[in-house]
Length: 311
Length: 286
Image 1 (cartoon, helix red, strand yellow):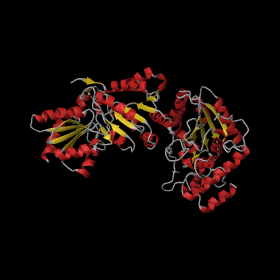
Image 2 (image 1 turned 90 degrees about the horizontal axis):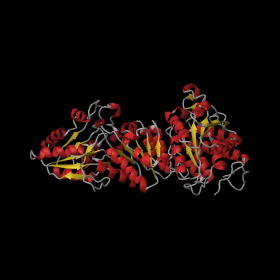
Image 3 (image 1 turned 45 degrees about the horizontal axis):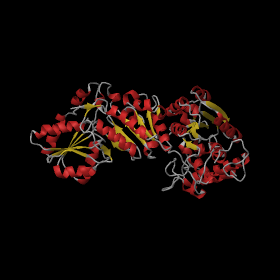
Image 4 (image 1 turned 120 degrees about the vertical axis):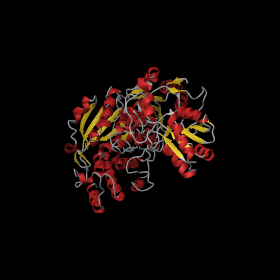
């Protein structure tokens, strides 16, 4: 499967947007070679501000710029912008509903060798807790470009979570993302796997394995966690009777919690969850970590079987 | 509207360009509003509103270029209240300047009021930032000042901080960044009333020498008596002339200024006066 870097495409898309709109401003906190906002910095130096190792200050500056009519993209690693700056995200951006797009890289444990200080596994719960935020986790580079364009075109705060490693391409060129509208990647009638981010491709692999065992899986890419496409979830629960949610995040507060909350009210069916549970990971290669912490197609396959058994 | 030089004599017909004598009377009036509002609400922070009253009066009735009837006028000077708990003195100034009816002040902190306990930029005409969690305003002000530079606009940005807020790390992040980005269209003021919620700032987390700290961070620093209107106005004029670096006005003030029993009294950091106390305070502010 072809792979591409979501960070690289983020940088390229920023440049494309910067050419179209002179009110787009980009901020970074000393990690622009990693977040790849340096492409924008290179082409539009007057509209790029490196805030140094001042993430909280960066969020405040972003808010001030947005309050003055700018569309602001602010980037650094997910841990530092979400966990360190939660109060700033809340009061300076979420409450006043300002036009700031937080595009964070290095989400999840697939960050790898840098270990727990750099692995954002609480970020989706925290960002989904912020009332005015739209939260998007793209599945590949093509969807990343679409998400960044969509964020630039919509008003209000966004959190877009990208990863560090290259990601398999699951979409063809020309794919169009609609915010808040889940994508059915594969039709199926026995069970639905709702996945986000890097777990989408793993869900598709699991579905292939299960197809050979005569289990017909629907796979939904829930790229937008907030607002959640509740209709797609309820439809999937009604039509397939069981749901498995897969995400590179803690058990609490992320996609699993959000899907469960919807189904508890609208259409309770057997559910299983593929996630990190309630623990931190460690240093290691991305694939080794995903294996150790239960985020593989095999783990999804097991969860699907448990869910189907409970139907 | 062309910007008036601060040194020009005030025109008595223009309520936003008052003489020093008129400013003194206005400051007193705003202080009376603060007492009445907080007493009516039954909660709030009188101490830090009273210490900032002269600075805010000078800004809204002499220094700022603004149109109260058009709060979002693109060329207006921006005032960012970082010490959000001083919302009552800002509301009092905004009401007297004409942003909303003075009668609305009595709704402070009540359900469905536009006058929230701490500022809300989307609710209150004239309020530029949602504040109340300390240490965030200077960062926000840098963003506003940078936007002016990007758009070649001539407005100035003013940010009022408390001295207690200088204990927050983000304040010093912003202090570094403002000097680094050379935002000379930004004037910060520190309302140095020497006290914070639980006591004297020097006992809780000493900030001095504050002037040398800001200088070391790359700022032009003006140290003034924050209750002397002539000094306040002269400092704003000096700040406006300074090029290449931001200016901070260290305003030495008295917490609770103008009400004898509130002055330097930590109890009135965040406590409303009783009805009797309010009556006594209003008599003193006649």
